[in-house]
Image: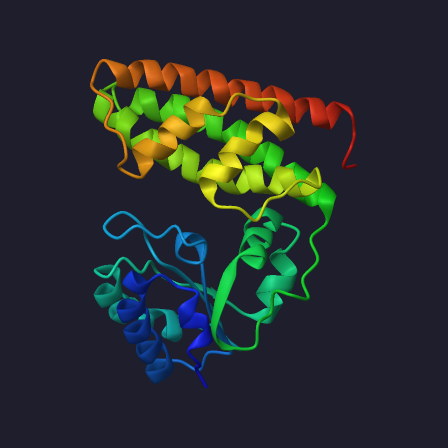
Length: 252
């Protein structure tokens, strides 16, 4: 039975769509657990900008179940609730070593709305976590370069790709902090501020992109290419720092 407790942990802007979504799930499915993760669980949901991420645990996931929900999902997409992450307990156990970063991020910060929480008992291997963090950091740098070229080097492309890159980078930073026994369960600006103390990196360009992502700054068309250049340099420095950790074999 739903109590008021989990709802008190969610920003009020998310209550109405999530309550309707919850009713729809329980009407059409038999969930073992329903939880919210991502920006809504971290207290960073920004109406009009942020999506709401939901994970649904089911006993069985079949093609008819997915097909049925695909029709229902159209309504909730308009409410900024993205298609749920459907998992069985077997899925979770089998993919833990493949996606340690994602599952550890959910484990650390989520809000259980219904059912039995499967995350407290999960253990993530540090070697797998470091491997994925390193892979994601390298891939992020390569994707930014590629997306800039694919966007024909237009300022509109920069305005889109930088927030996407930073969104993908934040879980990697949290994962690295966990490996280094540093605080990780923080809001995003604090995670970026921590770059200086933990990885000896200047956080200023990453914070600039965070402000862009949140609509708190609007660099002009002449400033955006300079911001991209500084961001690429910052990503390159982060890659070097992570690679130095590999050479030290700290997590092997």
